Length: 453
Image (tube, rainbow, N blue to C red; front, side):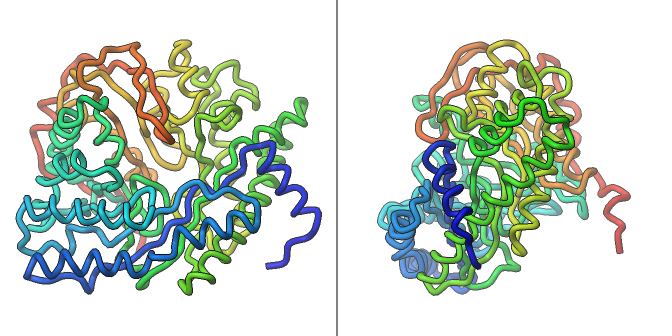
């Protein structure tokens, strides 16, 4: 890849003044060969393989960061969905395996390790059942372990039995960490149509179609896009799209350069560039503020979905021109707790849960990092998951739910999660019950869109 001098100067400005960063360099590691009927052997193999492959990940990332002057915020690992190698392990042994993953992450200086996961969109195996039962405790006794559960795909429909169980799992995970505002739920995401090469947490796992090991990169630049738009306050919407597209091109070029350098130095193949605009609580590093710069007085008002669709499409177009290896989720994240503009929209009454749900039809993921009232029933949580899964299933896109029913908190209160997870105002849920729907169980059949062969 050849980088011109003017691109280098533009990148320096984006880093110094516009919050450009590499949000994550994530090493994917296959654990398929670690499976063993003897749990202790499997546990040891998992630890040894992760610590062997990722032993230099943090050091190389930090060296590259200093050399090129572009911050790499998180160093992460994704692994084979753990449910696939559990075999006859018990629930308690599965919790011990989660502790082993946490120990490996701490030893390596890794921020998060994802893949304590199960893919149950069509049915639940013995390993899946064990992992689901272990989830609440495993997430409450570990710090860096992240989990995802796939409950639906366009090809299979929605596993409503799994959706029902996830409501109870989220509720229990919140209660087990009630002294930390239910923080365990911030490490758990429920998916429709998950992807195998996602570098972002909490949903990252190393899919079955991936190789032995890979480096995937997630670049983030809401501040860069916002700054670019502010230079053209009178541009029409076609020109706005073009500005975002050109900016995404530059961001992607910088990110792929860093990713390829890290991969080369580690001797591991480069995988994909995830184009997602992922906000932080830093000043002017907000997806919501981009939408407001496009022309909304406050995110959540009428026109929000149109502005988000424009932005998401332009990001994809610009990134696709900059890299032949675009993957992951690639678009725009709208995590409430991690975006100052989203928080302000909720506080001001412009943004609510229904509008956030509608926005997920055109963004990259779904209901993300949303604090809700602690008295929300498990069936209500399950119904929220079912709604998002239906949006993803029908539209053939990834959707997800990462909500936190904060124990003891009521609508309007503010809760702190800390670090990149930020803070969030507690949102109320619809008071009417969905329990009869959820208790029916079974599967919602795959839609006609599944018949594409």
